[in-house]
Image (cartoon, rainbow, N blue to C red; front, side, top):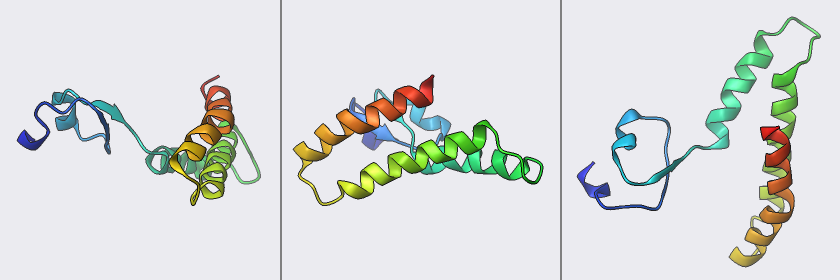
Length: 94
């Protein structure tokens, strides 16, 4: 982990505890988060839907935003995320 010494930017990680020792701001990924919601949805009784399904649908909306802006300029991607993804994330948090 010495190679990260002094790094204070964002670091997308998988939850490995060693990264907590860095000065970086740790961020996760939606693929890892989505997996837990998928497991919860699969564990529901047949034909039932719940919060896990709602979360999976919301994550899919975030993925659609990313697909739509994949080839856009960094400035356009940032603006679109600010407009569309921020609202989705606020709904998700609520």
